[in-house]
Length: 528
Image 1 (cartoon, one colour):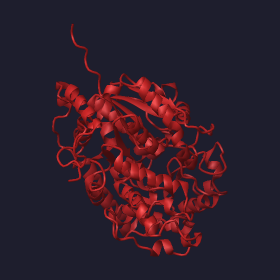
Image 2: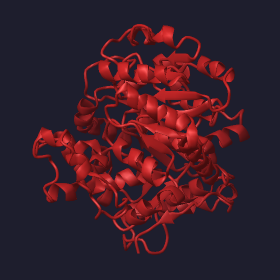
Image 3: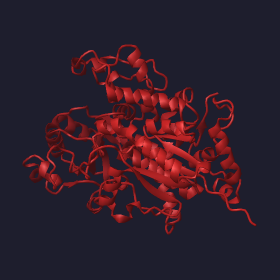
Image 4: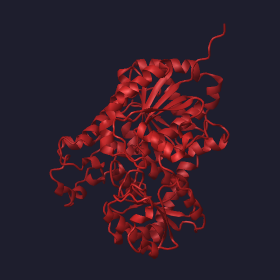
């Protein structure tokens, strides 16, 4: 009797259920499936399942051979399927997903060849409880991760929580400089740290959840993956290697995914429906086709940020007064007024004033927009995916951070990478106009475009093959980053991964896929 072929290694992806986490997780899962033969189970919440079907049709969750989607309940009441769920409620509901996750793993997945990839604290801890090897895929920048990692020190020094709300308004956040944290610039102001510090409540639930997640990253996963690259964040990556399990800088995922798709356009494992939870308007690309190179300001604040009525009015008139052409994404849920027509929330007279030089849409294929030659600047909330896409495209940024890691990302873009200008956190129309003019024209604009072009070349110039992704895939099979791992003797998870290595890593198929290739600064890092 012949022996049955061993099962492929199986990855369970369980990203935090928000667009900015789902998209990079889906990219990584797709690449590991396509380029390295991993089977994948990708977990969505019920709310996101409904959003995907609404946005992308019945094939959105069809999957492909060896790649399937499953759904877990999120414990929240039904909400608007055109909008992200309330973030605070979603964070607090995460523990309710644990029983559903355990049931999935224990009853439906191949225990002998399974590994979790997640950024959800209760899910990572649940995997540890049931003996499932796990890797964390962190969807923030390495720099903002270090800022999160040091929040406990700010608490210990009495800087957080704030003494009173007046500290948010009296200049305290700007005048307080934090210059003693490894992995971060010396010029970090307190206002440049993640927004969760902006509380006066010593028992703030979101701050507590953040501190718990940082502790989890240090002790639970066997490795941590970041979507970044060493040239951009060498200081943070070096500092992280001293406090985390082996870490991997992986990317640029969108570029690798396009490359894989171009090389196998008829492969259903690659040509899969996207991960956008909102329906994309591709007509805006046709509108851009008629514009001159570097002439359009692209404005989008991601999938969660909501402008106040006053902010929207000031932004609108700032753009109008700048005189530049613009493509503006206004989600249906972005304002309190949920009008079906995105333009209905614009101030009276705005459309007349900007007739012929503006395009307003409810959602767009952002990466394709940023790669369009007509786009000369990107006004962004500084979410990490948006910033990476802008850097990959060589487009300078107008930075308007709102929450979470965005303040740190903005600071890095403006002062360290020199690809953006800071608008501020509640700008008036004059400030918006001045920032647009600064980036789109003049000496400062030329400097930003040169710097952005250099980063684009740094990132994209060496994207040939799967190098950095290959390192990650090899670790997922091997369970170790190599010499110098701080873990000491092999854990049960590492032994489990060694078994996967023996049955798959040395196969001719896998060695063919993992041969050495030139790629941009692909490295793994282990504490020594």
